[in-house]
Image (tube, rainbow, N blue to C red; front, side, top):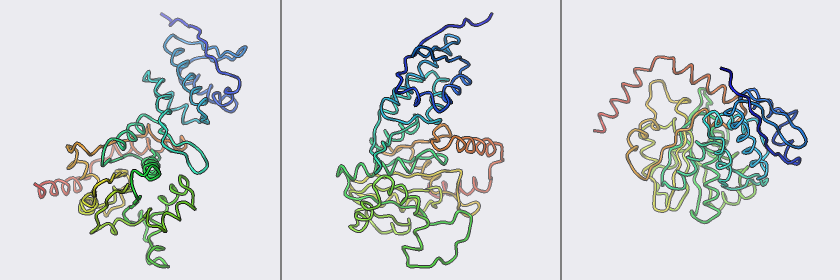
Length: 339
């Protein structure tokens, strides 16, 4: 028996149509293709033809996209694709709820908000917990959102300084002896952190606070022997720490501090068969109440849509590969030594 075709209407004001519909109606075409509906604009109304379920999902999604547009967002393919993913799960209304969570503005005045349910969970955990582990593939906003939360806490005087750190380890290549002073040697490892802060704070504000010691960007090795009070601390690329380095870092935390640990377990640059401190910490600390864990997935990638496809392709490939038995055995020996 053929499904009954129904017609629904959605009102999209003329001043928002170009944004919601996309260039050459690309967003509408994507909705039509994915939800198997027909969209027709007539007399200012958008007519939606399809089965009851598909037409309702399309209307809910278009209404959510209109809400984003009314709040000043430029609708992108990522917004539409994620909205379609939610529509398939009958969660289209969540797109607008996610967008209402405002963190701060960039130096250009662009609002920073979570864009996916995973990112919303991540931000909520940062607000509630003293230590948060944000783990997931490239492009999920782990570091950028943590930076935005750190700058917001700093501006609101919830912390007196920001400390950003990552292990100084080559990503497969050998850099040798770099020229310049010590800061010049470590800067290439820390450049992604600088870039994010420049975008959120502006170069002048960042430089002034660096000179005053209120913002510190340093390799993980510099953290040894310190106690970090009243600070917002971000450890980036944590998958490249050893278990000893991770323990050293986490035991630096003082009163009034908040810690975010970010990493991507699929992009380790450690020596072959070495155990990652991030993997061990997520097993050892999972039962402590004031530590939160957020595992982002390829669904939370907010870069170019091609990045999401690349991440998914690698996930599928790696899932088919045999596990590294040597690495598993080494992790097991570490667990037994702890006991």
